[in-house]
Image 1 (cartoon, rainbow, N blue to C red):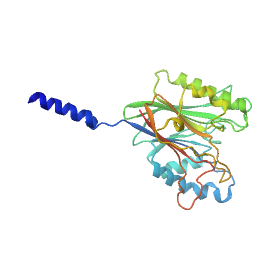
Image 2 (image 1 turned 90 degrees about the vertical axis):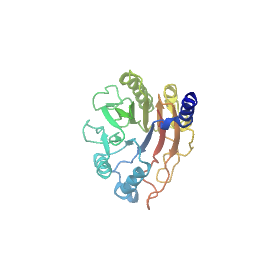
Image 3 (image 1 turned 180 degrees about the vertical axis):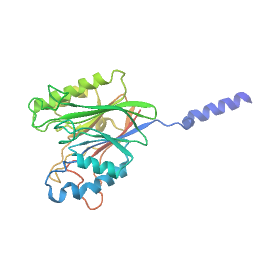
Image 4 (image 1 turned 90 degrees about the horizontal axis):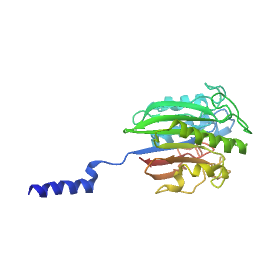
Length: 273
């Protein structure tokens, strides 16, 4: 009889997993559209509330924004006080210009360390690289969720210079290897300003997986909308070191009366450690 009960307990644990579930990481990449742009009815003050509605709806563990100015970051952190953020302005390494900030839910994720580098020949100081039209940066962070450490990198590649795109992404790939000698899981997000068939992505595709292409549940929708005048895929979530990607979605939900929360749709993925 004793052997029967031992067998029964083992069998139940095998069926139910003894109540344990795989830890997941919810990630969003969101080009928020710079708040200083004169976009008329699409200006930041008209859509900022809908941005908060989207983030409250999706409740990501972590998300990266592109084109965000300091007052936009302040609005998000004031509205969503459970989130901390890291990042610097690309113009001076302090507050000036666009930030490639990383936000993390302090209720689920712990920040360990972080930094920013410029996509240029002099990555440690504010600078423009190669044929770029403006300074470009990448912000990285080492974080932990549920005992799992991981790195997150958020960036925005140049919209003009092909050399800047290619060399900037190569620099990011090299830096990932440098900052992650222990081989922790890695997430890379951003507005890459290139479509999936661009040769700029060739090297990255040998190092990381595209969440859109590998998720068990996914879509093929465009991410840049141009306020309704475009529909191309240029925003990405890449990963390595995770066991799988459960879901990828291009977030096209309308929040309130605002047709577009940005000229880009956010992209959202659920990764499994």
